[in-house]
Image (spheres, rainbow, N blue to C red):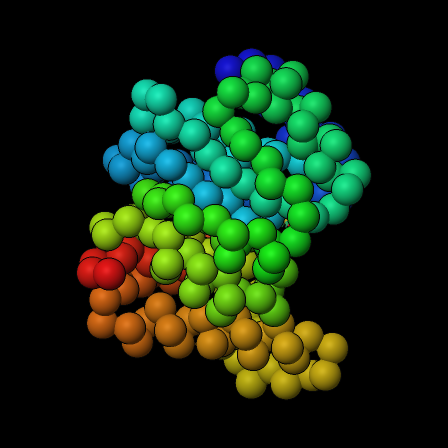
Length: 197
Ligand SMILES: C[S@@+](CC[C@H](N)C(=O)[O-])C[C@H]1O[C@@H](n2cnc3c(N)ncnc32)[C@H](O)[C@@H]1O
């Protein structure tokens, strides 16, 4: 991996206001990945590929990452970035809407990272649960959404997103087969270990 190029990808993304994972969230996830040494990771929401490239450092020998992105410009940039950072053999990019792509996937994953449309989090969770291995971990970024999720926020504008994030939190905290921690890093990070399938 070319770390200098990875740093340049991060700087360019921040400059262009591409929403990439925040340092504190990445630090937490990296600690888990170091311990898990995942063979397969599924990411929903690649943007320009920054988080997937960061995660690729922690893959087990022979492991790989599948990631999904629907924005055409970001797809082009992500593919260029994978080459520049020299991780193109480790990361497979599915191009299109995760809502359509996920139901076509049937692989098993040790880790799933959910970081796409907030209004679709319950659907992403359902698909992640179908494909995660027992003892696997599902991370969901932006789960606190500016604090709206645990407040009485009910404005029209973000109502659907907030309602769906609340539904996600309810499912991962009330399902007895899932053990969940919610951390106030970045915009909120839910970490759910699947105890039993
Ligand atoms: C927060 S960014 C991802 C950042 C990336 N994980 C990182 O940290 O480097 C969310 C991305 O998800 C994409 N996205 C949102 N909804 C999607 C969907 N339904 N299917 C595919 N991509 C989606 C957006 O286009 C955007 O680029």
